Amino acid sequence: MSMLDNLREARSNAAADAEALLAGEVSAEALDSAEARHAEIADLDAKIATAEALEARTAALAEARATSGVKAFGSAVVTKEQMTYDNGSDNSFVRDMIGATLKNDPNAWGRLARHQQEVAVETRDIGRTDGSGGDFAIPVYLVNEYAEFARAARVTADKATKMALPAFTDNVNIPQITLGTRTGFQAADNSSTYSPTSPRDMVTSTVSAPVRTISGFENVSIQLVEQSPIAGGLDRLVFSDLMADYALQLNTAVAGNADGTSNNLKGFTNLGSDTTNGVPVTWTQTTPDIATGLSSITKAISQVVNNRYRDVEAIIMSASTWYWMASQVDGQSRPIIVPTGNGPFNAAGVTSAPGAAAGLVGTIYGVPVFVDATLKNAVGTNQSPILVGKFSDSYLFESSPKTRVLPDVLSANLTVRFQVYGYAAFAHRFNKAVSAISGTGTITPSGY
Image (cartoon, rainbow, N blue to C red; front, side, top):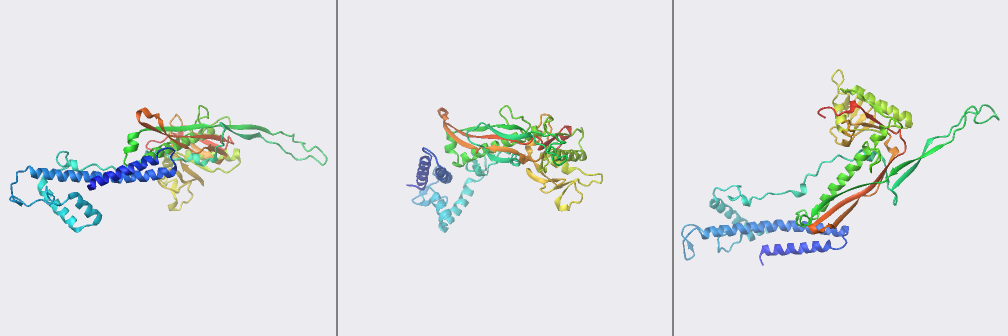
């Protein structure tokens, strides 16, 4: 049996092992073992392809010499010396390739070097054009280094208090005190304890957070699953992409302007823009400037502090808004928001993570600033709202995302469905814990 036959037999055995591992109910250990088998298959495929190409090249050269009309007398070649891997030679190009690369055989290396010189003379002027040598220069796909689809990071959702979603419910309710009791000073000994202040009874309500479903799927042909060189890595590729978009959709809803109906979550922007129950701030300015923007932020901080009576935890804005602010200067062309490395003095804002795409980037008036790309143009008027508040007052209930592989849905088409789904509910315990700054001043500046 030739080396090529051995490689093919090894691949067949590995493929059978992989199929057996994935038969029936699949465990995590079986997936890991199957992935190892698929990696072995990919390696064997590469070796088989190399061996086939080498044997084809050797056969082509032998055929060319056989049809060239060279006359031979006995065992002596009249016109030229016999080629290293000529037809009838005891030397094998494939065997020498294996001996040189795996065993470092010096004799094999020597024959391969001599053959390279011979081929350089024989092939003369050929290049990488198909039909003139290019068939032997094949494309290489670095499939393990694929470029994933770019998505915004989950920032705002992680500022809320995260809790596990209770099981067996479609609605999460949190009791809320909307009007508290009242005390007063007693007018004199033995007098009514309510004089001169009248008593007040507590008024309660309920914060209701309906449970919403987030889901997505990708249909993949069985041929791609079985024939892809990344093998077991294909399911991870698909599920990783689905999970990344799952996180994006959840974060967009938490930060967004939806009101909690129509199978969505009531986002921070909607809560902070509520003119009836919330504490919104309007930044109206056709040509925005940094002074008015910073003033709007301090107003929002004041609104939260004066109504929630707790410290503001964070400021969240789009990266476009932050880097526009970071570019602004005062009348002496000095930056308003300065890097920490410069030893800021009397700075309104400080950059602590220059060039960051998401998360903590600095401070404004000492309050941590986070950037979230999902806030860019989050309102229908192309406004990028700025959120200021105590975000932990809102509770984000999440189930663990679930993954499924459904081979029967489109089985007639030899198609497998990869699916991700999960549940979430978002409850705001205090209406005035977050202020949203909106208005014409928050329209994304040109170039940002």
